[in-house]
Length: 222
Image 1 (tube, one colour):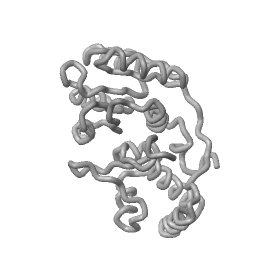
Image 2: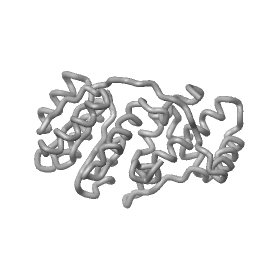
Image 3: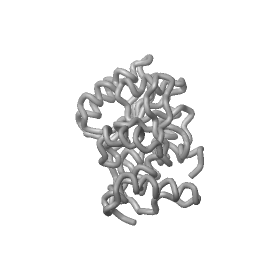
Image 4: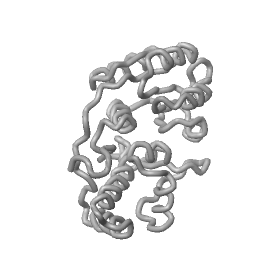
C-alpha cells in the first residue's frame, strides 16, 4: 500500500480505530505500551494518529487472538510477518451504500469530491454552510460527514463538535491548513489535508464506514 494512499501516514484517531476494529481504545494503548509492535504517529499536539498499515496490523493481531493465540504470541507473529515482508491480512470487506454528507465551502471541490464518491456508489448530500449541513445531518442521518474546517468562515471545527455530540455517524475533517490537532480536539475521526487525493479520499471513507477489508471484524473473511 503506497504512502499516497495513507499507508504509512497517520490519519485515524485512536477512537476511530477502536470503532473500526471493535477493539477498546484502552486495549490498543495497552498493546502499544506492552509490546511496542504497533506504535502510532503523534500529532504536534500529542494525539495518536494511526496509518492504514497500522490499522491492518491491529486487525491482524485481533484476528489471531480471536483464533486462540495470546496477545504476546499474536504480536510476535505480526513482527515476524512484517520482517518477512508479508501482508498482515488478506480479507474481503462487505460492500455498502451509506449516505455521505459533504460539508464543503468550495463548490468546485465539492463537485469533484461528490463525483468520486458517487462513482463508488455512495449517496452524497452536499451543504455549503454549517446550518445547512446540520439540517442534512438531522434529516438524512448520514453515516459519515466530510467537513471542510474552513466552511462558513472557519466554523468547521465547531460543526465537527456538534455532529459528534449527536454520535450518529463518523466525521472526516479536511482542510487546506495543517489542522489535524484542531480536528481531533473537535472530535473528528480522521483528518486529511487538502487538496484531496481522490483515491485516498475514497479509501478513507471506506475505512471509516467499515466498507473495506481493512475494517472487517476480527475473525471475518480471510
